[in-house]
Amino acid sequence: MFKIILIDPDLAYLEKMSAALTPFCEHIDTAQTGQNAQIKLSQCKFDFAIIDVATTDHPSLSVVKYMKLNSPATKIIFTISDPSILVQLMLTTNDLLNIGISHILPKPFILSELLPYLQCEQAVVQKVTKTALSPMEEINDEKFTRIALNDLIANDYAIFDFYFRINKNQYQKVFSKHEIIDFDYIATVNQKKFEYLYFKTKDRVTYLSYLNSLVEKFQSLPNIPAITKVKTMQNLSVKFIEEVHASGLNPFLVAECETICQNMFSLVKKDKFLSEQLDLLQEKSYSLYYHSFLVSFLTTVACKSLQWETWDLIYKISMGALLHDIGKIKLSSNIMLLPKWEIPESLKAEYTTHTELGAKLLENCSKIPQEVKSIVANHHISNASDSLIANTSFHKVYPPAQLVGMVDSMANIMIQHEINVEKSLALLLSLPDSIPEKKQCHQQFIDAISKCFINHQK
Ligand SMILES: [Fe+2]
Ligand SMILES: [Fe+2]
Image (cartoon, rainbow, N blue to C red; front, side, top):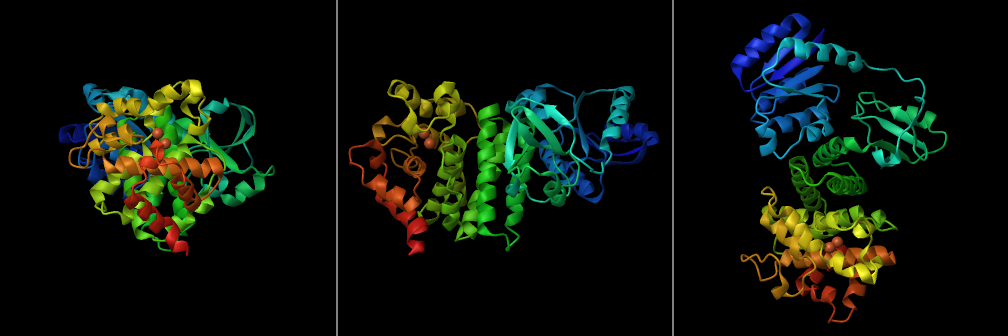
């Protein structure tokens, strides 16, 4: 016997299905809208949620996201009456499975198609008492993403399986999905003093939603240290860019990106000491993912002191900065992840096409604002006549694209020379005026960056 919630805009379907399932359930509830479903989900732990893709007011995908975070043990079954809805949403069934939907059921269906699934899944929804680590498993390293143990924040339930990486392609499960994360248990079983836990890359979208909701919560928790906030923001951005590189930009990721940038701006706006934490985050080696975070974070902070401080604009600039190098996805794999200063002379021409490739990639994505597309297309352009996408509401070269370009150069110098923002700005400004990077260093940007990252230290 299990607890089920049926979520569907069609009242007649809800009544019919509810009556049919009642004999098999301990408790059954229905909701005609996503909003009503979320209220009910917050009041009762359901074993199963059967939700139709056409649910509105909150849309079905938002309700799925809510469940993944707030009731991760609930198994989600998606019902779809018209497959063309998935095409409209630019989604595949694989995308749905990747975000944690357990089963997809085309409508109409008969009870005998649903019941075996519920009965077999119920066995999995049992809680487990932990005694020791699971046996070693041989799984390819490529299937995993890692997370620093220090970055793990206590939660009621693990939102997916966590592993220790014992050796190359060898993993041992520490927590299964739904188990309570117990730090004392980790301390007991972590005899080799591992610094990282690993989770399957397919679960990364769930992790993104989790981090996003965590950052949102930070805003109402005044005692969270600034370093924790920035570090979580960094994790979130890095995992987001990793996922974009692995799966391309789909509607889930665009929605997550909006939330990331909204959260980044809210944090930066509310906590004036946040920028001082940057030195503590400095990475010694280059990664495209960290680079994207750094450029977005520095840009967002710089925007605070520019005259661009309207919510709508800064959010778009942060988003443009986070996605600025998205075109690198389309470069050959031997240069895609290399830092600019390590690109061999023979491949420089291909490398410089990443702005154009990025613009093409986003061209037909209606959810991405034009300002973001302009930043992606023009962030390395210092000359107005070279602009790929001119934005007539601004100057000939969209100024935020130039700011992102300048911050991009600074972020590169910071990692290449292992120096902080102040020294990297000084080094950039000492370069000859003729080089393109220097041409993007407009006085208003220099003042904004100095004000946020340098003057406060004096
Ligand atoms: Fe770039
Ligand atoms: Fe870049």
